[in-house]
Image 1 (cartoon, rainbow, N blue to C red):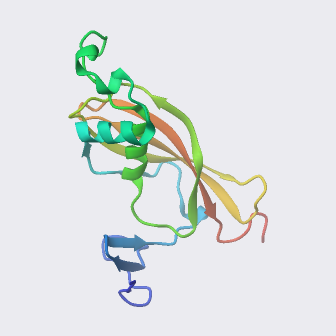
Image 2: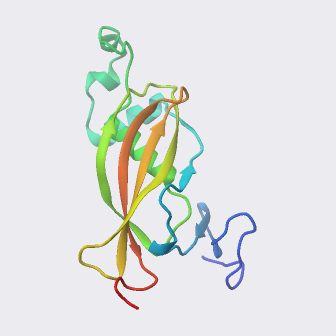
Length: 180
């Protein structure tokens, strides 16, 4: 069931939010944002998320990655990091999920480039993500869309970047490229 606050009502502190859709899981916010409305250098920062043992065990079960680096505390004591580390793919998926907030019907994920796991993430580490608009460029084949690249950096409680990647967004243009 979806309800709206009314035609084109805007939230006082969230410019561009035009409707609140209520559903069983909570509140979903939707805002139209076009290619021309993104600015290079623009940033957003997520709230924090603490990595738990349950996260690691669930991820191992979902992926089949039961390597001792993630699952065997005693073996890890004999290794350079001295303790279990979170799967890189777990850190990546949590970071991506943390950046998902307002739904933009004019944009969709086009892929990820330059994914790097820079430092280990341990049980008990708290991560947040800073997403920075790095580039806007024309789509090579679609005049009606552009590609927005945002640099996503997962940062631990010590201020260290632990994971970085570029998230490519395929975004609708207000006017097709080349249109007068």
